[in-house]
Image 1 (tube, rainbow, N blue to C red):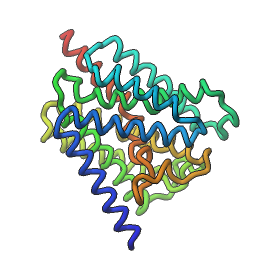
Image 2 (image 1 turned 60 degrees about the vertical axis):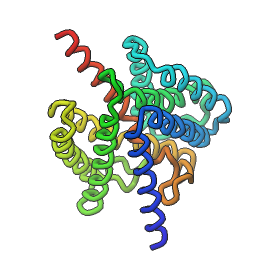
Image 3 (image 1 turned 90 degrees about the vertical axis):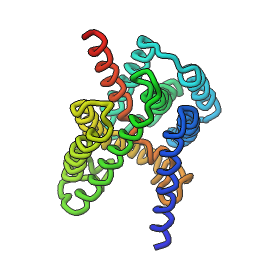
Length: 272
């Protein structure tokens, strides 16, 4: 009982902090997610057994260059996106490898850190600016759909789940839960499009489809890192929930795909 209360209170504080910082101003949004990025860097370094001093400096440098001095540069942003997607593709392939390599050199670890943690956070902090001006509701909408996917995947999986999705990595995840999460996320994306009208119905539906398909993949990827490290959670900063990376694993994996989608939309609108 006490654990459930602690988990609930911790979750409420996290959601209120995220919503208030995102909606208050672009500076509070960038500051909060900059802090989240640094915490996730430290947590991820522990998972892959990498000293965190240099990675923290790398994260700070990336934050200063690409976020603090935020300017719209389509070519640079596209290169960052493609680099992130390349790492993401490799991480997806790793899911189907029975065992991760016993020893990875530091360069390989830094590449994963940069492409899996740092660059996705950079792109996440750029997403509210995809239309030029700061629009926090884009981020709020993405998080609502992420939470919808997670919630209904859990509910449907717990009540109807019989077939395991990827048992050796995450024994509790089921195919039924995955499909349930996807279906309710699609429904949620349509409902969201009726209120957040700065995107069309079709744009929100594709956003929901990307989140529904790839949100669970992001969770599985972090689960594999944790299983390899022999730990249950990435950290202990959020009582009852684990680490910040445990809460943001889905969104940071999904963001590069969403950012590419929004950039393509902007390009099409510009050309037409």
